[in-house]
Length: 497
Image (cartoon, rainbow, N blue to C red; front, side, top):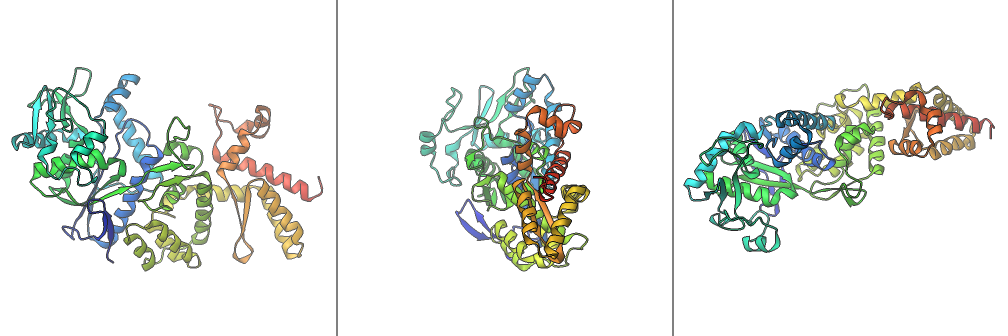
C-alpha cells in the first residue's frame, strides 16, 4: 500500500519513495540524558515508533537510528550539582529512558548511538567544513559560516536576516556573523573534553546528529524526524553542515515534525505545577499502554492535550478490548482500513476509530491493535491486575450478582440503584454480551478520594498497606477502595440506611 507523509521541507503531503526500497533509512533526534523523560519527550518516540512499525510491514528492511546526546552543558551542570560522574549519570538516565519508553510499548531502534562514541567522526566532519571554507576556527572555537549555505532557513521558512531580527543570538567576539553557530568549543579542566586540531574541547550540539547520521545511514537518507521545537535551529543547522560537508543537495528526503504536548489545556511547565515525567504517571498507576493510547488518539501534527479524563477513557476502552480478545489468537491479516489510515500520514486517530469497528471480530481487533503497539502481551500486566482486583473482591462480586439477579427478576429499580450507587463512588459498570458485566474505576477518582481523607481516616482505611516512605501502592489502594465502596452500597440496598 502506498504511504503518504507530510514533508516539512516541502509543506505538503507526498508519496513516500525510499532511496533504496530494500533498506529504508530513518533518523530521529533522541534525548539529552540528564534526567527522567517528561511526558512531552514521549510523543516523538511514539510517533516514529508507529512509522517504524508501518514501514516494517511494507519493506524488507528498515534501519531506524535514534541517538543519545550524552555530552551537554545540562549534563555537566547535573554532575557538578550532584557530585556524581558524568558517565554514571548518563548511563543511569539512558537506561531510565529505555525503561520508560519500553513501558509505553516503544520498540527499540536498530541503532542507538551515543554522541561520545562518535567524537572522531565529528572532528573529521568539522575539519572538512573548514577545508571547504564553510567553517572557521577562532579562539578555541570552530563556527559554521551560515551565509555560505544559500538555502539556510528553507526548512523553517525564514531568512537569515529575519532570524537575526527575531531571535536572541549569541554575540561573541570570535564570531564573524551573529548567526554563525558553534561546531566545537573549548573545555576547561572540570568539563569533558577531547583532543582536536583546535585544542581540547567538545562538540556543539548540532554536529553530533550530522556525524552519527552520516556514519550509520550515509550522506543522504530517507526520513529525519523530531519535535517541531527542533526545526530551528537544530534541524536547520544539521541540514546546512551535512549538505556542505557531504556535497549533497539535501540531508534527508522527508522531514517530519510532531506538535507539542499540553496538560489539561495548558503548556506543560514546572511553574504551572503540571509538569510530570512518564515515570510519574507509571508510578501513579497509569498503565504505559494507556499513555500510548491517549497520545495516539491525536494526530501527530496537532497539539496533544493530556487530561485525566482521556486517560480514564483510554483505560476503559483498553480493558474492554483486552476482555474481548482474551484467549484468542491474532488474525493472519491486517485490516486494509487500519493500514490505509496509518499510510495516510500516520492518521492514528482514524486507525483507532477503525479498531472500534473491529470489536465484533476479536481476532482481527487483536492483530490490528498490535500494529499500533496496543494489546501486546508484555504490556498487559495492568489488565490482569485490574481484573484480579474485581474478581478477588468478594463484596463487589456479591453486589454484582445481586444486580444480575435483580435484572433477572425484573427488579430494575434495584439494579439501577446498585449501578447508580457505584457510579457515585467512581465505579462504572458496562454490560457486555451474555450477561457479563465489566466494572471500571478511575485511577484519578481513587487518588482524589485518598487526598480528601484526614490522616486518621487514611490510617483506618489504608493503614496496613502504607509503604515505608508513606506512599500507597496504587493496586492495593484501589482494591481496598473497591472493597470499602462495595460494602457501603451493599449496606444501602439491604436497608442499612
